[in-house]
Length: 250
Image (cartoon, rainbow, N blue to C red; front, side, top):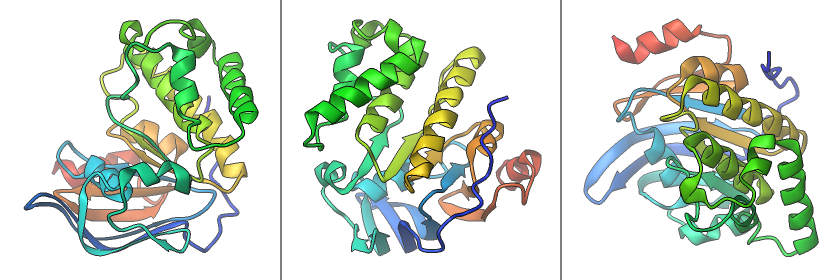
């Protein structure tokens, strides 16, 4: 079993803090009055039904959606409505829903693209080779273009690309979406291992996921969104997965 042990030594200082945040696309407000924190060395799982605003939350953090109220603070800096291209230079990596790989680039080149904010190219090369050597699924597609990879292969490469960015904050959106159960297991095995390595460096992860059971295997902290609002925010284990589902299914 690949369950990650809950972090027991989490800093009380937030790496990312959202205070009374509302997020919109144009005139449409999707999230309202959200207050939420993630600490260094912590995995925050954000779960909820389709349309709850989970992806919008991540997009608001990186500037792909407009924060129309409240404050977003990252590492003591104001992040509200920053330009998306600044994220990498600030130590934020985003693994978006749908993977967004370069379709006609190989797995290796897609991994390399994650290292663009970094100056030490030898270190990037080391990290790309390290990821390929650790995960056979990535090694298998190292020379294959992304457009002919399976969904699971694409997702593993997308996660690796985020890891190569050497982030302090890694945002991952719906990694299990559209995958067969056996591929979901493989993807979460990768997530479990890389989360351990990142958290040892005092980085943090925000994982958006509809699969509550999988999310709870890896999370320290769980936030439940429904209809654009937080309906539960607490530590893993405070509520079983069935009760978390009840918060937004009934």
